Image (cartoon, rainbow, N blue to C red; front, side, top):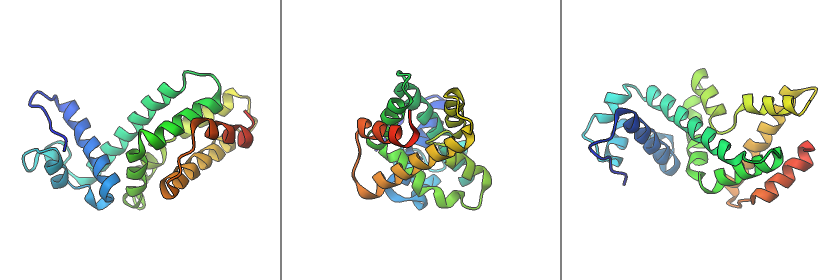
Length: 185
């Protein structure tokens, strides 16, 4: 159980709430993500989460924004190298091991985004950035950066689903090798 110190600022409280939502989605699916469930998880007074996020949609939107922020931070940490295959390999390996709950939560929340375009876009981009993929292929001189970026995202999505459902986690080197074979860099 996560406890919230009395001195937690509102911004920190919002992040803790979103982190709890991610944990609940990862452990119990999308139906586990409720205001009262998060209140209980964080040992907050009843109705506290509703103060910060009035609706479930607002809570989900903030949760996906939190996943996106966590992903951007993790990608920045993985990209100390200029070799794109190594960067992608490190990012995905870290995602599958250290951030496995983020992957499970993202898949769990997919049904919530099925009929909401804004949530669907946020969900699509929360682990893998299409804009960053296009920028990568543009920098590499691809004549079709959007198409190549779409292929890379399919690769990342497929790898994430395979890891999630098979239980086998490839190493960063294995992923980098697969990226090199598939994309030639």
